[in-house]
Structure formats: structure tokens, C-alpha cells
Image 1 (tube, one colour):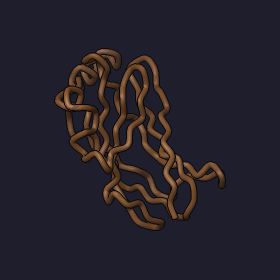
Image 2 (tube, one colour):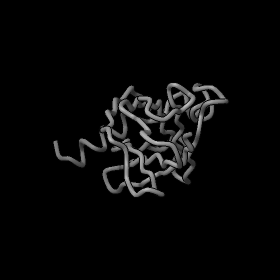
Image 3 (tube, rainbow, N blue to C red):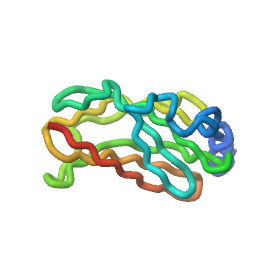
Image 4 (cartoon, rainbow, N blue to C red):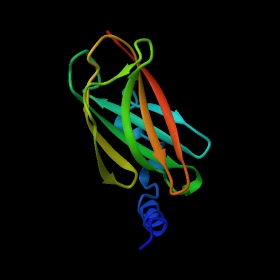
Length: 138
């Protein structure tokens, strides 16, 4: 099977399920969910634990929802960057596909206080997009 056929099969396997009908990420809880909205799709995420603290490992629960039932891109890479200091995290993340566009990202840690950017690289067989969300940690 070619890489394009494999990518297309993976995209079809990740078509949005109930998350699209109920509002992307609504099952995470209204108070904790954060969203990045693009014309083609929405990425919703929730940190676990919900309160982010310095020097504490945390995970992210992520769901990717397509528009109008279209294909959901694949989550390729997740990390964090501290733009005011010009460096990223000291840890590598582990992405686990949970099916239907849901992902779990382990190994996240903000090792110092300040403004961080969560960086989500999402892709399709033809292109990759970078989605960025800011988090302030004290």
C-alpha cells in the first residue's frame, strides 16, 4: 500500500464521531476545554490536571473535529515553546490515538513560569498545519 493510500485510509478511520454533533470537545467539560478554530476543523483540548503548574507533568486530551463531516487531519506532533525565552520543553511528548479523532498526549511539562505556546502540528496526506494556543503558568 502506498503512503498516500495509507494516509487516506487513516483519515477515513478518523472521521468525526459524536464530538462534531455535540460541539467539538464539549464532552471534556465546559470550564476546562480550550479550542483552536480553523475554517477546515477545530482542535479542542483539555489539560489533565486542569490547573497547570510549573514543574508538574501533565497530559492533554485532544479531539480534532472536521467541518460538515469532512476528513479530520492527523495529529502529527505536539510540543510547547516559550517564545520570550527562545526554548521549548525539556521533555518529549508521547501521542496516543484513542480513535474517532481523539488523542492523549503524555509527557508535557512547563519547567519554568511564564508565557508558553502549545504547538499542535496537524496534517493530511497533502499538507501540515501548525496550531498554537497560549498558556500562562505561574
